[in-house]
Length: 399
Image (cartoon, rainbow, N blue to C red; front, side):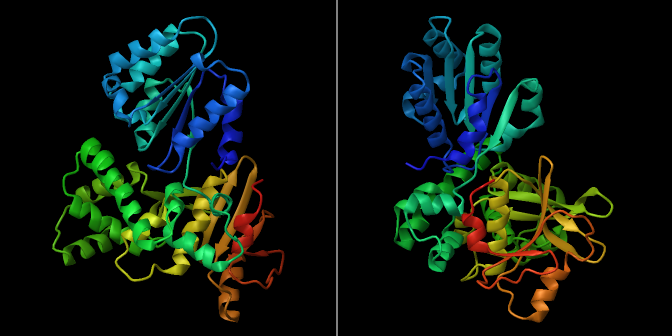
């Protein structure tokens, strides 16, 4: 089992905290495994198993606990002394009013540490923040990074065939069990269908799954490009789907709430302001993109851009598109006091491409690091701008 140290290292300092630990991520990205690894570490610290309470709401034996009152009763009956108890609630969004249970436990039991996971953005909502009174810390969990994929599979990370396999089929951990492409497709379809049925149709009440599918196909086909509602409406009309702008944004919001896609905003570098228009969308997992792709091959340039975006998120950065006076920077990534600028290119094939990628930084006058990432093996670094081979960058130790 792959130990997902990048997440465990962030969570460890909160093991004994009374803050609610919330792990959020797309279905099958590995949240349950991380919970089990936390429990294993607690046991290594000599925590008695009787003081570790684990409930997975996807298992039928816990079905009666989907009633929030039964859940509250069950947990309280397990607590029999004044020592610290660690409570793990996996896929908690299946329980209506789960927030009431958490607040009740916090109010009535002094020595308790609660961990919860979920697969949709209900756990990110302002409503939840209000109900829990800000007494929580949130960890976004993503599918495997390329480096984790290599560690789990034991494959040669420097091999471009391995890299393109990752780009094509994504980083959901269980897909690595299969080598036959038809098996991988079947698995990814089952994951996607479970997201549609549980997180979209049931929880969000959206009945037109054909429309949902068409919209996702459009997002896949235009990943990394400026989003235009007008263009989407035109595409849907060509598919004999006539909808209002309001309905379009409702379904687009549903895609985001199911954590299938992520919206990225533009940041005006000179005006130092976040812009709400002309944002872009990237896929949380490129394997889902592959099975929803209308074309024979996904655009490789935009796919590797998506890989870089996902990697930056996993490394803990907040990521934006950079708007300059005359153009755009692919990514501005910030965390704590750190900021980096990144341009992504498939290959620096000629002087024109080199000028485009390196020249994009010309209007930026600060001294923060500037990178160009591509699949070239030759180092094109110049004028203080660092060029890196993308695979080497993905395999670097996270700092």
